[in-house]
Figure 1 (tube, rainbow, N blue to C red):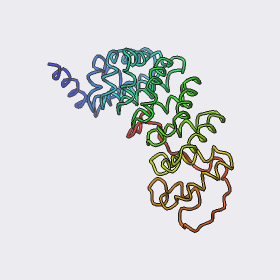
Figure 2: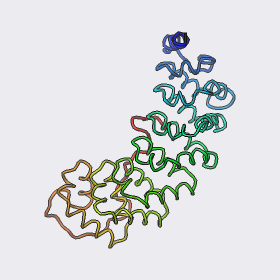
Figure 3: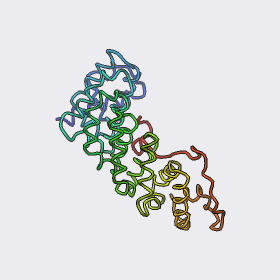
Figure 4: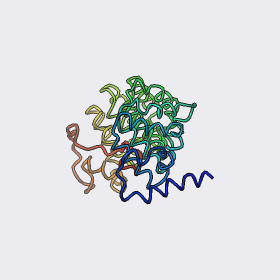
Length: 305
């Protein structure tokens, strides 16, 4: 039975784990079975680390061919794929990219999965933008959905960071066209923040202006997770007069900002974090006076990228 076939190598991995040297000989011929086991997957990762690159790495990687989509949904095997994608030359693991594109919709399906999104991000990071063009195109087709998805937004952020210029421009244009759709969602706020850090000066200004033109949007963002950081970037991207008007509107709602877990950071930035009667005069702070904290990797994935 299939369960027995998996149990045998998994049991061997558990019994040999204490003395495992991490060599390819320990896992050769059993990479896929071991990858699905919580202990065995660590042995496979160690073997990949020892291999590093070259023929040994390619030989181990070949055992994962045909299993990419299943591995990208497995709580153990996804770490093996991530390890593989961090090593060697992209040609050693091109099959990962090819299997993500095997059928329409597979890549976006992976991008919405808690483990799959890690694989999508790694592929976008490791392959040259031109090589990953087809994957980027697939993601772009559903970008308006992925950008507000609690997991898919990480793939969109990675695309803003590593994608081709055309993809970046199209993503920012999408945000400018309908900032309320994205800005009122926590995931969308994270994407907007990434765009404000990756666009050209003109694109950043246009996006910031589009946001402040939407009545109440800046306040809604300030009160949302990821939104407070995005609001600070918006304020720094605006001209002095636009910033002063936006600041004034936010100060009118200072009680709500101070009472919000996320909005309090904006209140502090505006100088009204403690005392409602504090100064109302305004001097625009120099650029770079805050640190963005929007995550660009999947939640709970300390070693993903």
